[in-house]
Structures are given as C-alpha cells and as structure tokens.
Length: 271
Length: 284
Image (cartoon, rainbow over all chains, first blue to last red; front, side, top):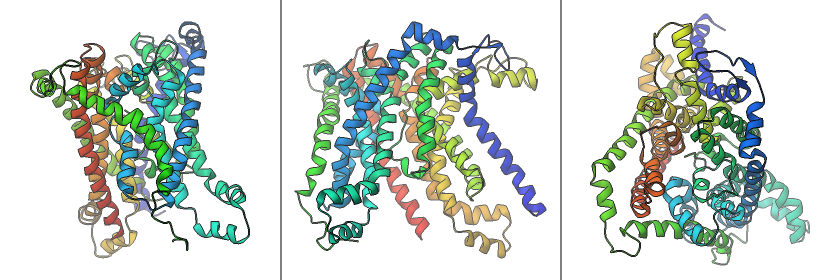
C-alpha cells in the first residue's frame, strides 16, 4: 500500500468505526440492561450479572405464554401469506394480464402507507367480526403486511426462472407433476424459503397493527415489550427484547446470502 | 424471453391473483374505505361533511402536530443524508468486511423498532453511556446532557432508526459509479475536492434525492419511536393513536389518518420517479 493510500484509509477507518459504534451501542445497552443488575448512576458496567429479569418476565408477565402466542400467530400468518402470495406471484411473474401495474400497486399499497393510517379501520372491522383477541384474527392482520412482501420476493424468484428449463422438462417427457417436483420446485425453493422467513418475521415483529387488535389472551412479544417499557420496567423490557431480537438477527444473517439488500427496501418498513 | 406458446394475455391467467385481491379487499381496502367514510362524519351516522378535517387542519394543535412531524422528519433527513454520503463514498468499493457493514446497516431496518428505541433511551439516559463518557471519562461536561424525551433526542433516534433506508440507496448508487470516470478525472488532473464536485456529486444526485425521500418517508410515518421516546412530543402517527384510543374520537383520528396517508402516497410517487431517474442515470 502506498503512503498516500494508507493516509487516505485512516479517515475511512475512523468513519467505519464510528458507524459500527453508532449502530451497535443501542443493542449493547439492551444486553447490559437485560443481563445486569445494579447498573444505574454513571457506571460503565452493571455491578453484577444476573438472569433474574428473565425470571421476572416469566413470573410477572407470563413470558412463556407470550412467546407461544407470538410464534403461533407468526406461523398462521406465514402459511396464509404463502397460500395467497404464491399463485399471485406466479401470475404476475409469468403471465401477461391486463392492468398489471395497477394490480401490483394495489397489492403493494399496504406496504407504502404507514400502518397507523389503516390500523384504525382494521381494528374497527376486525372488532365487528370478532377477530380481535384471537390468533387467527391477529395473524390475518399481519398477512396484510406479509403477503405483499412475499409477492415481491416470490415474483422476482419466478421471473428469473428460465422458461427453456420448463420446455426442456416437457421435451424430456415430464408430466405436469414431475415438471413441478423436479424442475419448478427446486428452482423456486430459495424464493419460497425467503418469502416464508419474511412473512414469519413481519408477523413476529409487528407492533402497530397488533397494538390495535390484541387482547388479554393474545399479547405478543412486541406488545409486551411496549407494556413493560410503559410500566417503567426497563430491565424486564430488555430481557423480553433479547428474545424478541433473536429471529431478526438469525434471519438477517441468512438472508444477506440470498437477497441483495437494496431489493428489500420497497417492502421492508418499520413504523 | 418468451416461450413459443407465449404468455398469452388472458383473464384466465389472472385468476391466480384473485385470492390475494379478495383478501386485501376485505382486510385492507374495506377498512381503509371505512376510515375515509368515518372521517367524513363527526359522529357515527351524523351529517356528512369535512368538519373533522377542519378541526385538524384549522386548529392550533393540529398545525402544531404537522409542524413537529415535518421538523423532526426534515432534520433527521438532512443529518441522515449528510451521514450517508461520506459513508457511501468510503464503503463503495468491495473490501473485506463489507458484508458485516451491510449486516449492521440492515439491522435498524429489520429489528422491531421498539427494541431500537429502548436501546437508544438507555444509551442517552442521564446516567447512560453517552453521559458517562462525556462527564466522567472525557470531562467535557459538568452536568449530564438531557437527550431522552427532547426534540433533539428524537432527531438522533430517528437518525439511527431510519438512515439505513437512505444509506443503502445511496451506497448502491455510489457502488455503481464507473471507476473509469474517476480515472479520467484523475488523468485530467482533478484534485479530490474538484473530483467530488464535478464527477461524483452529479452522478450521485439522483440516488441522494431518492435516498432522502426514502428517509423522509420513514420519519414521517414513525410511530413506535416517538410513542415510547417522544414524551410530550407527539408527531402525527402518535397523535392519531392518542386521539383514537385516549380521546375516543375515532372519526377525528380517521381524518388525520387520511391526511397522513395522502401525504405519504405523494412522497412514494416522488420516490418512485426519483428511483427510476437514478436507475436511468446509472445506465447512461
């Protein structure tokens, strides 16, 4: 490396380091708060390390049940989202249909406007249909967000499928079922897995819609985090947050290998 | 590439989108329509009119809410673009560890927003790490700085939460700049500053604009962050929630939600135009 380039890399290194600290410190804080006690009044680290906040979360807010609620709702939402998104994405990717761009906009609109703008209406309608405070109802609310994004991921997977491979399969004598099992499914698998993971995560992490349709039997992790923060139980909220964060970290780790980050922007939004 | 039989234009083929459209019609468009309908009546079953909009857009409190939302969003957007530009220029070439940097950049986007807000609240607390370093370690300050629940604090929180949305757009713009153009500039004897002004900045302008709109969109719609970290400062999303669930003025909240949705749609259309321009600029 030439001296000039070495000199140029010092500010770059400083900038990168500052960026890394800026992003990671809030997570470090949540971890310290969740696993530490006696950490107040200008200290670098907690006085002692403890798991007591997790115990508190289990004893006082029934963390186990909250986790079961969250995962059950997310699984239902994932299945419904895929069932709706797969045929829609296949159609959009591989057929010429009239008013395609209007259709795409109509499907993506739930991801373009802030959740709170339609959450009020969703709460009102779901309440009238007795869908609030039920796994299915909350899962269906999450599908509003998950399915459009699953369509995006799946359509791009289906679009890149080379039609010559399907033709080759037909020429080689595949019947429809064989064609599906041996050609289409393997080609579509990465897209299907990505769409399923994103649907799960969208539901598992959702806060705004859940806040307006949850009930006493269907508290989810994000809602419980909010309730604990509101009650002033920062350490319990941090302990719950640690559990809440695990899927996001795992999925991001896996997904960066499958999808280019810029392509996710259209669909991913926190509120 | 088309198959010989072609993707025939047919309504038969459109059947695949029907289940999803039917679901969205029932669970999204109908509630949306009922929100709009509700916003046009002061009471359920009451007279039709724009009184709710008048109450929101014509009142001091309503305009204050809009002004606060715009102020927070603009300040965070300007800071975020200012932060993203040098970062994108520094990180645009492939290097070891770029994957890790992208991972970190995606984190605020993918995690539940509440958790980020909680971590930020602890970090900037009066007794948190930032104040600990400023007061006890570096001795820059005598008294801890009050950040949490203030407007500047909210701007910092928005910056953390939403700058990655723009930074990824700007980074992808910066990564696609042809190195030959810079080499040409260097051969012509352009110094770094001139190179930046004459070569990099014009090429990056569409991505910068698209990134800025993207960040603004996110800030404008922010709910979880100001809900738990805003204190008395309530931007529009939090205000809608408060008016609906605390004041129980559902139709008044609906009018605010419609105003918010319309502004957001205009911004989304602007973003898509800019993005197309950015993509076109890169191909040219």
